[in-house]
Image (cartoon, rainbow, N blue to C red; front, side):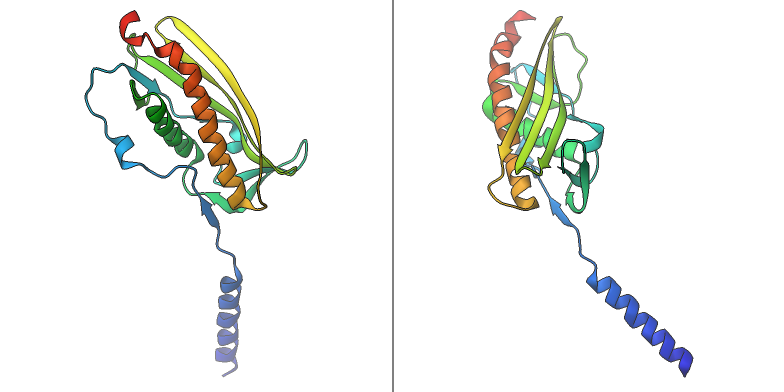
Length: 196
């Protein structure tokens, strides 16, 4: 009798602990777009886009938050719904296809001399305690024997507190960053069909 009472108390205690645990929240920058994954043969010049490369501290499921000038924290309850590099690559491709539709933007590396190759390295993609979202990094475009590069660094003020506001600002900031990149790339890629 005493043994069954102890087992019942143990089961009740365990179920109470499990019901008090907070489920993690998941966030997405870019959701899959069925149309962007379709590749159709075309006479348009191809630009191969490598997967976005992240700084090591951003390569986790948790959203990163900068507490002060030296301390970074990775959230355990606020997580990316999918690997951040995949989301950023998808959003980059979606935006480049919309901004520069005269080119075929394909994900991956293609080793052919007449195909331009774009690489993006993201060094900052996180929130700060001062109420800003940080987006920073660099890009490199290789076109034949020519190489072009640039940097991006921006602080975006948060309009509200909390992780949903941070993710929304990071998403908006990434869209603005990729739009600015498209503007920078356009003159470099204009003569892609005739120069190689």
